Structures are given as structure tokens and as C-alpha cells.
Amino acid sequence: MLGRIDQLSIFYKCFKALCCKGPPPPRPEYDLVCIGLTGSGKTSLLSQLCSENPENIVSTTGFSIKAVPFQNAVLNVKELGGADTIRKYWSRYYQGSQGVIFVLDSASSEDDLETARNELHSALQHPQLCTLPFLILANHQDKPAARSVQEIKKYFELEPLARGKRWILKPCSLDDMEAVKDSFTLLINLLEERELEPSRM
Image 1 (cartoon, helix red, strand yellow):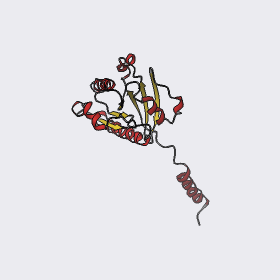
Image 2 (tube, helix red, strand yellow):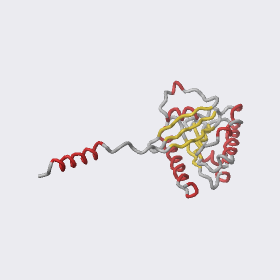
Image 3 (spheres, one colour):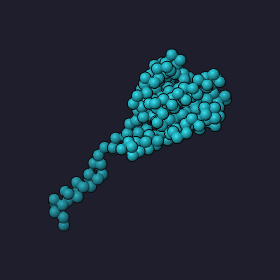
Image 4 (tube, helix red, strand yellow):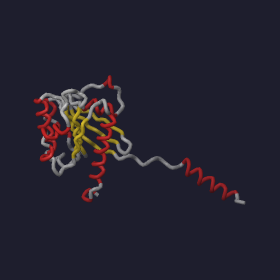
């Protein structure tokens, strides 16, 4: 028969195995900047990802910061307002960013789409952003006038401009938040890959 000490030892090991696994390792955090014109839907998308009440959503006029939780990471997203008077100051908030989210209204007017294209081109070539992963979301795909991802890719000249860069272009709408989450998961994968590069070890 087992001695009392042996019994206590076995009991302790079983108890530890079942109940004392310890806290899970902390999820990595990444600092991102989210840009796009007013009306592109940046605030609504981020608020939905944070499970906030849609009735309380107000368009961002300056900037706001949200911690967006995912299973394998937390994204600290700095959302910048998209009005004409604010866009010229975007670059002041780029420092420290590890990735970029660019939201565009795929159903917008030709003029607004042209402006969005110019802003995206500027961001892709900015010294503080040009080496970072980009998630480009073609929002409002649920609207009748929405352009397809292929149309957006061609109009924005993404293939020649962003060649050699890490970027993802995905359609999205508030009607399909699971697809939005999948797009962010792809971005997290790019962020993880970037961290593992030998030059960043």
C-alpha cells in the first residue's frame, strides 16, 4: 500500500494537473492606424468588432483608440477622422504603427473614390508606413452601387503600386462581420510573420 506521503504526492499532482494550469500566456498586442475618408465606415466596423451598441456610434472627428480583441491577439487601433481638414494631419499619428487598416466606401461617388485612391497611394508610399502590412477593406458591399474587389484593385492600381508589399484587399459590410473578422485574422498573420523576420529578431 502507498504511504501517506505518496498518497498526498499523487493527490497534489492530480490536483495541479486539473486545477492549476496557470493563466494562459498573454496575447500579443499590435498598434495599428486606421484611415479612410469620412463615411467609409471605419467607426462602425471597429465598434462592431468591439461589440459596442450600434446606436451609440458617432463618426470620429479627430481620432480615437480602441482595443479590438481577437483570439490570438489584441489590436490597439488608432482611428483617424477622414474629413478634409483632418487628413492633412494623418501623418502626425503614424509613428509607432505596426500595421495599417484602410477603409474605403466601395459605393461612393467617383470624386470620393478618386480622393480615397490618392490617400491610399500616399499612405502606401509614406516612409513610416511603406514597409508595414496593409489591410484594405472595400466596405459597403451590401449597397447596389458597390464596386467589386476586382474593380477596386484595378482602379486603385494596387498590383503595380503595392508590388513587393504586404497587403490584403477584402470586400466587407456590416451584414457579414464574420468575413470582417476573417480579414483581420489574415492581417494578424501578416503582423506575426513580420515579427518573425530575422532582421527583427
